[in-house]
Length: 621
Image 1 (cartoon, helix red, strand yellow):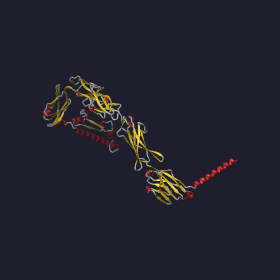
Image 2: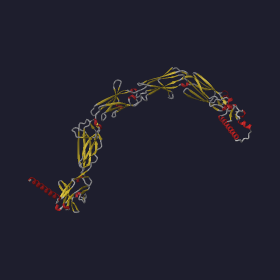
Image 3: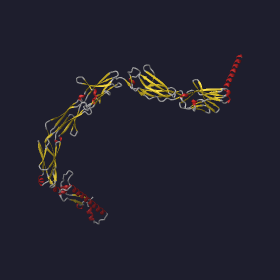
Image 4: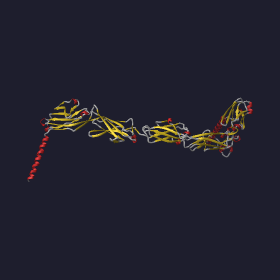
């Protein structure tokens, strides 16, 4: 019972104490401010100052301070509606709102300070609080520069890879390095990062970071970049630079020598390149040699580009074939490598055409042509005539029943299918011997007295023949292969009309001759010209059409009863049995020669006149 009383007394005592504390808090002046305000350089910082005066009382004054080196420096004094600025460093940049918040315009990094708001409320005393103002400046995009001189894998000291510069940032940023996307960390004797810091007059920072790292052959394609890290409103942000590649120097380990184009496709007359490549950087110095028959090496370096490793061989021949060597010398470690390649120049030589029999050929004979050649590759053979047309495949050509027309130049074309463009040709003349044969002559020839005409005679023979006329005139001769043609210009006289002309062609093997008959033009006039023949044909057709129309009109009038004929007359017209009742048009020719001219065929032949003396057209139907 006594314990219960004691507990109740203690509870009552604690309650009275809490009530006294709450009353005291409610009666005290309170000032509240944000702990931190962040603003970008050049912007406006607004720092709020909220206060509570017990009993809804009003404040007596407000003072704004900033702290510098642990000392307070008053910015302004506010009493009622009057604001008194007391700091010249902020003149023209301060303003106080109706809620008594302090605004600072055009802030700079020097404004990064702690600001204090102090409120005086008479009997309620003085209250204050503070805010830390943080001014930040986002850094510019970092600038990265690779080592322009390149780096060597054999460098004794750790070489410089690149440099990164971050300008105009606040607060101080951090720079990291990355290779192929992975961040690099300082590592003894392998990776080293040095940074220098500069505070500009504006208060902003410029940071220069330099990366040093050892490299290997595998780093020849590596990409490096730097990243600038900065904090803003409690969060980390990053700005990356572009990627750069560093020229990595390393000695050659392998060398390759090849023929371009492929050695299998090289033929005589080609231009060939021997390309030597080494896997070092920079490329080593190249030298070229060719082995001789005595196993000595011919130095060809004067014909090559020692820097690019290319040996140019122009218009190669069979003798260009052989073993070639490329040697490389690394000037850093004086290490030498070499590589050999075999150059094969494909060729065709010794093309020969044999003719059997080789004795003079006569018309009607046969001959066999054989073609042979030598080459290191397989060959195909083709035979072509003098116009380039293919006449046969294979290395033999058989010609039978030879004539003068067969006489020609044939060529054996030798082709290497495996080497495009490799081919050679050899020509042979197949000459058929014999006495001349006249193949064309202008006979008969229709002329007029005293007319100047051309007499033509054409023959073929071998050996080349001569041509003679038995009459005087102006002759023009033409030769083409085994052909000879002569045009003789003469004036027609009585003797020429009577005797005609004789064309005689001869050579060592014999002679041929033909007679040209000359006919007077007046004799030929008995035969109608094609124009007169055409007129007669047209006249006949017109007559047939007129008779047909007349017959149709008579028949029509008869059917209509317009012709007053008796029964007998009607039967005479329509009766089909009576031969005398047929309506027949008889077309006769007065002259046999005209009929023969009309019936001449397209090939110039004449049909018998007796077969065409009469033409009948039945108009009964």
